Length: 428
Image 1 (tube, rainbow, N blue to C red):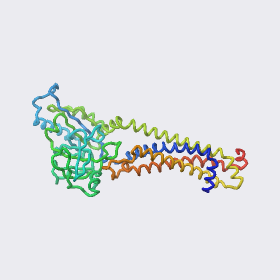
Image 2 (spheres, rainbow, N blue to C red; image 1 turned 180 degrees about the vertical axis):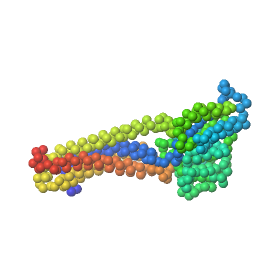
Image 3 (cartoon, rainbow, N blue to C red; image 1 turned 135 degrees about the horizontal axis):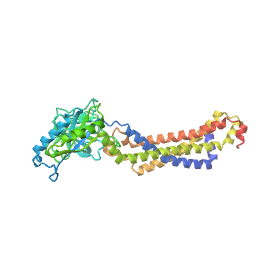
Image 4 (cartoon, rainbow, N blue to C red; image 1 turned 45 degrees about the vertical axis):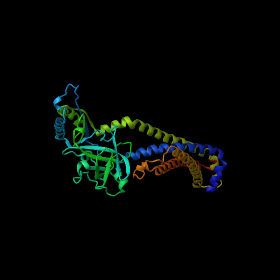
């Protein structure tokens, strides 16, 4: 069968050559379209590692001397502390609020338009990690507010009472696996750039997807004491409301009834936003337009590929109805005829795919597709396993091309093979 197929393809090489060129181009561009859709779906199904539902972010600013509300008596560290405590207590005493924490900068917010990074060192190895810094206050709980879970027990992460707050660091599982090879690193020591002394690992939490358009990066959470350096000028807090409370209704209630009570001393509220809205704003500014465009173009290309390839193979088979009639008159069964044409389509598709994937491989090498930062070379996320990713894209591309070619072959050939030999021979 394979010898007959190859001989038939060779005898019709002029017509098949144009089809082959068309399919090589299709395979080359289809690989890219498949990659965009696959990677988008892959990232969308990664667990974010936190629960954004019901989490609110609030920003407070301090009046300057040129502000009409400026109070000189409140412009000292002692007054700031007292006023900030009053504000925090006002928030935590809201019946709708279940947990809260104070941030050292708004960078400790998933999908915020900026993030803080810091260099850490263990033994002689250095790397950059994202940093969430929590300002410690009685009752504050960053893990409970975000719903971050312990990487090993699956339960909600808790502060480790055995490690002093100012000397502790909590790290993501990806970071722990990188340096401690899946062993529990609690008690190990990190050196942080710009930090005096060392910090001891107090816990390991599940990976957090701090950007929806990225896989989870290495993340560290460091508690710090509340002092004049992190309450002057600007303060940010997060809090979680109860599950049965409507977010939009609460935001309206908060702005009307609670926000005026947060104007204490020189502090006043300038911003209230839910984590859900922060994510939507980030997507709107940074990812949605590009993502939608890429997906739209990829889907459009898939549709055009399907129509084009099905049409090509359909016409190819219909133009050979006379040949099908001859095969039937010589005693070939419907099954034999269909198998012969399907085999030809399979060979054409396979040859075109091999040429296309070799072309795509050269382009990938030229564009450093296979280059991965050494920090993430052994990550569990598929994004960093470029060889596997290339193979997945290639397999999916081949399957799509093959399915389309077989659909465009099987239906017209089967219909032609069911006609009487005399009817089919009229086309010869």
